[in-house]
Length: 416
Image (cartoon, rainbow, N blue to C red; front, top):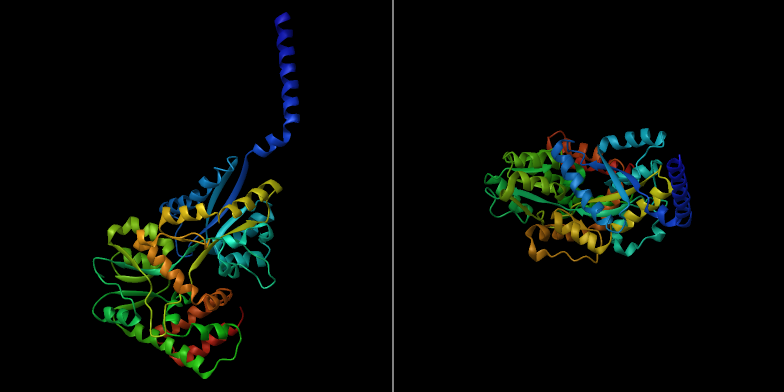
């Protein structure tokens, strides 16, 4: 009986002691409580959610999370993958039940759409160090009312990928590309508008497209520049060894399968292609043309804030968004993957150490020469759907360059 009474007293004393400690240190303990963040991550629109894809994308986001946990060890991040086309529906469904994600990783155009439709929250950029993100990239994630839809994370440049066993000297100009196609090199180009837009810079049509997109009056020279660009695409499609396909994902699969020798591609796929092709994979900048450099619409991966976070989850999500542009994080991301570039302009990429990095940097520099035009076109809501349809009609012979130019102007003037 005495022993039982002693045990009860000991438990009671321990309980009082724990309560006292909890009350005296509640703020410290509260800060150390685990915080679970749910992150919805979009894979490329032309990818399949297979085991290899899941592993690839989870590894990429884990690079960021593992660094973040060094300063926020109490955070846990649960990642779910979605196809781009399915994300909006999933967010609508989950937000309706207050189960939406705390963070959304996607591309800039979709982030803009999600905030416009109330499926995500705007970024509180006043508390951010905005100079740690290239100023031009903020235009990609800004709505007409000034709200910022997401934090840019990394840049995926558009480049050329080729089979080094077949292509020893990759073409540096569009003329060389046509010559190699004529000599037997199997060339693949995407008919998707955004993925084919790089040729407009090489052929002098990019500024004319931007003027049409801004509802500015086109001069006769603007009109002819667009017609000449479209005429080049039509001539290219007539060559036996140059073929247009739906998108870059299809091109990259055919390159890996040995059915194509040179394709335009996105650096987002380099990790996968390296595993599949090994040393046979070569990369180079996209060819220039008589009007100057290519105008690749390089993809920007961004981090948006979900609409259903608790205050603690939101604070942690904002901290992660701010952390992403830290110079060391940005540098480590680029060097670990050799597949994307930092958004922080202060981070120097060691281009001499890697031909791949040199190629990615060249693509970024080419894009920046046309940044104003590209940023405006990137905000057009239906350019890929409707603009691509115009190009399909052209390259498959259902329309001519002049009629296609008129159709394209209607698309561009139809709404940004």
